Length: 100
Image 1 (cartoon, rainbow, N blue to C red):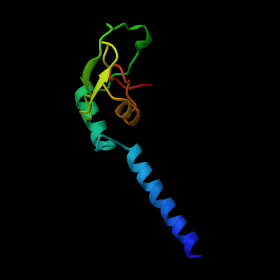
Image 2: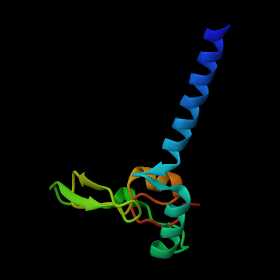
Image 3: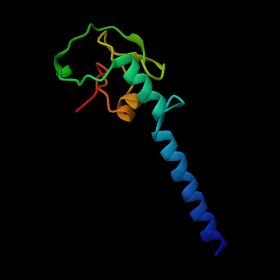
Image 4: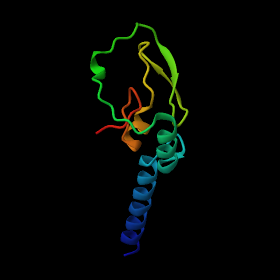
């Protein structure tokens, strides 16, 4: 019986940690990301097809506008937001505008 209780407690702790990881980006909470997104990037919706954009063949270092993480992009067409911030805030990875 003690093993079952211990397994259930460990499972609950794991779920809490996972939910916390999915709702933060680089240690910045979802609420802070959304507020910063509205103040920096506005309320406009993305209407561009970014699949046709072309960049040069050079690794380019870029910084996410919301969480500040620095990453490398395999071409010079760098995005505005990292994947986590785009997913959490519902914004376009490429231009930072809201997705429909």
